[in-house]
Length: 312
Image 1 (cartoon, helix red, strand yellow):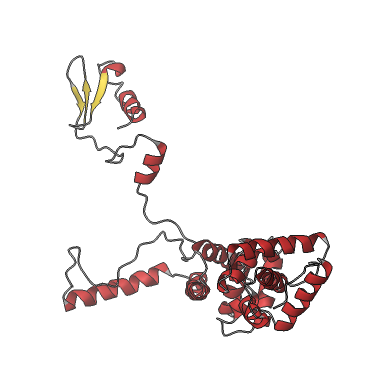
Image 2 (image 1 turned 60 degrees about the vertical axis):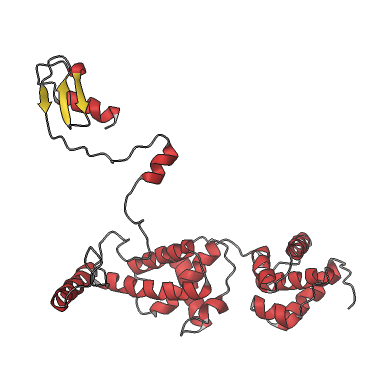
């Protein structure tokens, strides 16, 4: 028990004949005792604190147990409990058939009580879609939670009504990627949905407008590491590609250009300079742009930046 709790305990027993400063707490016995008279003022006191001790803030943070973390990817935030599907008891033994049927009924009603209205049902369905698309794109948990938060706000504001859940989820994921500067294009996200890129883009614009989401401007340098890694290029190619993009920004060559296309051209140029040659077709496929885009941006870069690319 902490010193603060012990002090509060002494103050509670000021009605006793013993002076408050003579009352101590015996942790081993769970008793408040007067050290002068030996009187037991209260016994069987329940210690509400943890059973462990910590001597530093880091140790206290590491040892604290507060249950599973809250998550916006679950419709109730992860506050409710769940009945497991394994049909086993506390010792790990499989339940008998009669008991399993009983637990099945519990589980059914427990699910029904967790999802009580149309908003909960909508968010539950969207959470499943979000997990599916995010897993196929290899997105981190922070992106999932941000997308779930955006979708929840859209549901509460009535933006989702009349639109396909899948399209709005894909749009929320794209917005989350833009916020965290994760290089994912609309084409990449839309290919894992049954809807078109046009519909996802429409939902994205709707979310940004109705929810007043602040989206940072896409930077070509965000796409460089991903493109280079997919093509198995070295770190010096990545560094040179970023330098090429920075030089292009100073000359105003990046204005109005597709960030992914410009990044692809910069990576292609840097790879040529270090003799780690890749075809324009390979670079274009990885970046999600056309060969024509890579070729045009490449010509602009070497022309205006006066880059001398060694001949093959």
